[in-house]
Image 1 (tube, one colour):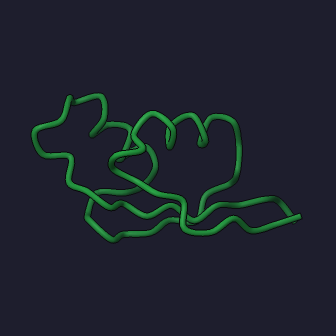
Image 2: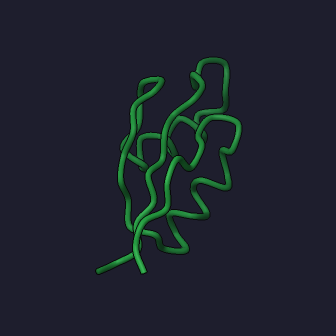
Length: 63
């Protein structure tokens, strides 16, 4: 079983740079309180770490 993380959007991308909005879309988010379960890869972790003021990791699953 692959490791996964559950990411939740906690803030709006309004009045933020476009690159931050694109990062949210890349994670599959777009509305506050929306959650996505994503594979725990360095690329996904980098995207989450780039916008810590907009998202939070709710849960880490896997081995």
